[in-house]
Amino acid sequence: MTQTATSDVSTATTTPTNTPTPEVQVTSVPAGGSATTDTEGDGATAADPLETTITSPNAGPVSITETSASVLPPPGFTLVGQVVDINAPPATAASPLVIAFEIAAAAIPAGSDQDSIQVLKDGVLVPACTGAAGVASPDPCVASRQLLANGNVQITVLTSNASLWSFAVRQANAPCAGLRGVNLAGCKVYCEVLDCDAHPHPPFLRVACRVLRSLIVRRTGEPPPCELASGALRIRLTNTFRGAGRVWGGPR
Image (cartoon, rainbow, N blue to C red; front, top):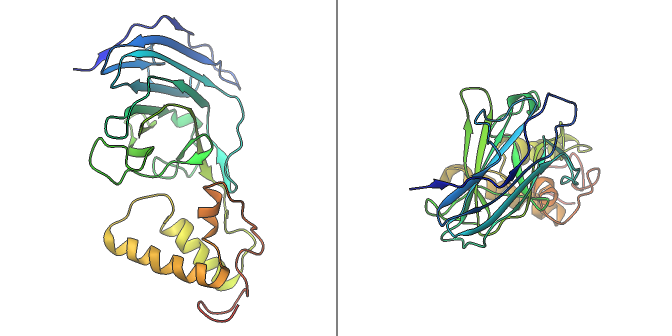
């Protein structure tokens, strides 16, 4: 049975402001125990737009700090809400930390939802889990995305270690900005319509993503722009695709 530890330090939710007050939770948890910033039990709100709950398979100290401190998002993305710095006992991919982030509806940009909000660990996009249930595979990974009855979004991740977490959505027309013709169409299909870089897909869509990716790499010599944006590489938005307007697979 999961046990929730009593906090030693926490900050109270305050009256809504343009910049939410930082929230800190410091405690110790038993093996299988949880710590949360939602000590009020009211979920994420406009005044307190993020609530974090972590369950640790191992006993030890846990700290959660939610702030509005700025971090750099990947190119083509805009940050959403607050960032979270978490310290917790090390775990393993087979028996990971389980971290649930609840984001207030008021903090979610218009047109975004539980599927379009991306989680970042240390500034790198976190992919969906593809392994057995409860296993961080890959490590870290997004285990579930939920739209709650109150309009809030809850995203649960599995990870072997805690770190700095943030949230982002794609900017309009990015990372395909600056492209034309079939180059723009190919980028939009891969990066936005199929969202090949961010979500798991049924087998037939995985095949479509692989085929489209191979055509993009064949023409450009590098992965699709959204894949470059999600890692350490940086994209050249205006000239990623060579030979704008030529058919796929043709001369560069």
